[in-house]
Length: 378
Image 1: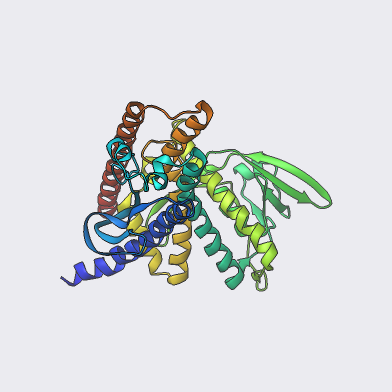
Image 2 (image 1 turned 135 degrees about the vertical axis):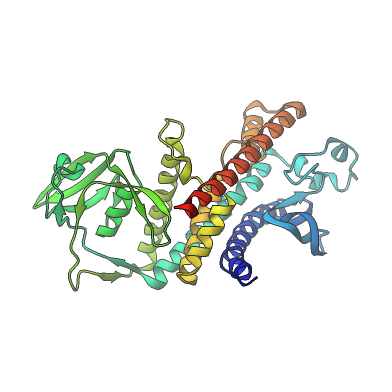
């Protein structure tokens, strides 16, 4: 019994806290822009399934918490379901006074703005969290100078030498040796371009990091990139860098761009046969990671919230019917054609999207369970 309570408090509670914040922000993005565009909103739900409790506001919207806390939705008046598929009968038979407020009757650019607002709200949440952490805590940094180059390593083969100052990786500014390590680690078996300064001379080197399997502090195995360099850290090498409010904006935007680019590269690996299914994670893995990160403190959990929010925003922009990206695809086609796709075509697309998303959920859940099982056996 004690073990079960410990599991709930250590894994489920942090996971649900993180997920609820991310879902609420995402759906609030849809809700606010819909309200600004005069859309009648039937329900705002955190979770799916049976309602646990809720209330109606002055605009007739039902705010509710539902039984399955793995997502949420904003449902507009005239929708067939929570995926915002319009109900032709409801649209055709609606009260004429309400008709201008139906989402389906708004112009295509208004619908695009409402749909895009959810993922953009996730990106904004990520920006605000990372920006606030950067201003509030600064960042620990070490001078980006190469200390040792291991004989026979990728770094040696590329021409990297002790004393070289790293200034950039793939166009991203390197402000500290920790930046260099992170940028290389997130590029296993992918070519990186490294800008260095050797004395007064600037050079550009290219290299492909080896794939190394390492164990993190929680005992999880991760595959990262390594090139074979190290650096001794002496007293006084580690400093706290505190950017000003304006510089912090640029640094935060660059960090978000880096995460998006690396996420895209990770997903791209699966299309060229380099992807590792063990690195994919579903709700079980996210719950485990949330619990592990929670042991490091509230700041680490807030930082994880920012990263997951960004990834959920990116995922929702994929052009898959049922996701926000699928809706946007339909509306962009409508903007180009001057008329919407037929309901039959849209319905086929939504069925395909639903099947694809469900298959992905089942696969990641199975993947989580299998690797967690073998992880326990190890």
